[in-house]
Length: 275
Image (cartoon, rainbow, N blue to C red; front, side, top):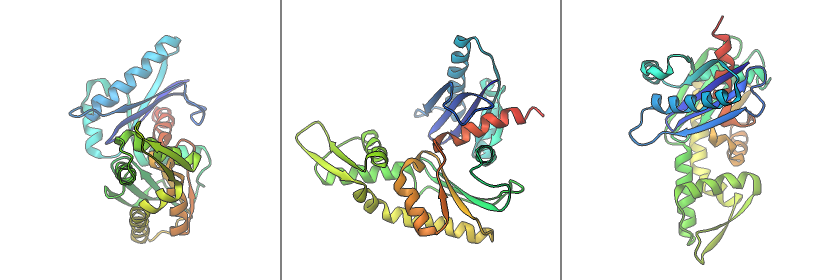
């Protein structure tokens, strides 16, 4: 059974076309849709869903269900009001994330965990009771976000004579997780060897702040979580996970393709909602 799952955020949306019994595997098709200036989130999502329905149509396989994971209540209202999104169920982002993490066995059925969604425009921290699925405490901060880390990389490279745009700086940041060392150059004579140690140094301050936010949220919840799960595109940066585990002294987990967890959980919930 083919289903569509969408994870929506300030940046836009990530949408997948997948078989409901294997959402953890590579999707049949996926789309990352950047939200253009002046474009509504609902319109952005609609573009992604329509693109995946077109893929399914070419394959001559019907899409049975679809669901959209939203973060804010006002986002849900806007998506509901958009005429092209009415066929999709709306599910809270945390519920979608937890559904997928349970499906893969990343989290147990009892106790509590911390979900840290590291997005391009901010970090959302949620302490979740695993037995009930309830969010015990939550906090959102725009002070620690992927966009700011990209700009830190860009400024560091510029200081060393290499001038790149933000997208190129982001690519270099992501390559560090795999390679450890990247030779950055701007097409001119200048180049700079950028290492994971360099990156760790320039993000040390923001990471300290982020872990402080997590600690405060845990304290507010009065829970004793056994783990922290990093989600969103920022979780792909291995240095962040290592720093979180070192500073928080909690087991820090990063699911495969953390940026797709919300969409994959939404795909699972699209069927659950039928009951």
